[in-house]
Every structure is written in C-alpha cells, then in structure tokens.
Image: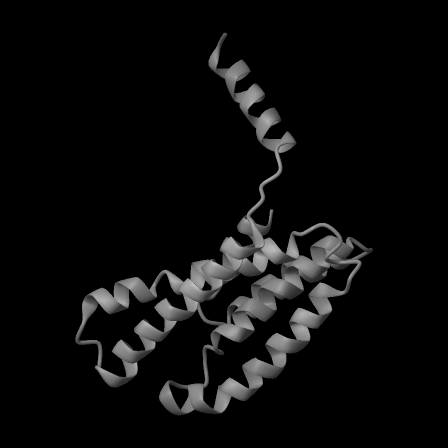
Length: 164
C-alpha cells in the first residue's frame, strides 16, 4: 500500500470518527484555563513579571478557553438552540464590564479577550448560517475584527481550526 492510499484511509477514518469529550473533561479544561489565567494575571499585575514560569503557564489559558468555546459551538444542534447568539450576548456584556479595568491596567487597544472570543463566535455563527453574503461578511469581519482584539488574527484562526 502506498503513502497516498494510507493517507486517504486515515483521513476517511478521521472524518468518520466523532471527536468527543465528556462534559466533565470540558469543565475541567475550563477551570484549568481559569487557574492558569489567574496565575498569569497575578504575575503580570502584582509581581511585575518577576516569575517567568507563571508567564509561560499563563500562555496556555487562551488556547484552552478558545478550544472549550469552539468545542461547545461545534456540538450538534448548537445553532438551532441559539447557543451562538446567547454566547455572543454574554461575551459582549462581560467584555464591556471588564473593559474599564482592562483599560486602566493596559490601554484602549487591543480590546480584551472577551472581544476576541466574541469575534470568534460571530465568525462561527456566520459560517454555520451559510446564507447569501455571509462568507463575504465572515472574511471582512475576520480581517477588520482582527485589528482590534487581543492576539489579533491568531486567536480567532486557532479557534476556527479547533471548531472545524
């Protein structure tokens, strides 16, 4: 059997298999991300970046949060149940509530991580709706939104890959 045939069989089996986590595992990832984010913030704002290991551990928080968000939005029936719109509303509210503190500690731009996750959720919503000009809107939203959020285009691209 040649390499092309092996790759074709592998991809066919990967597409056929469902990628699932137990709800408890997803919840554990969320809590781990929260702890790592807290460690990072303590190091950044209270310890003035004195402990590099805390910074390095903190870098894991965003990918974990992004993966959990993408995984939940990829669940069967999420769009039909209105999960995307509820999530966008919550991210907007909490992003706005966090903004004054974020601005006091940092600066106006980039917007805080809630807006990065909001942008990601909006992109997934536009992709899943798949109506008319949604693809054009999705590309424009990605390009323009990336200028304003934390991690620019990298975080939304990562989350989209995890969702896919």
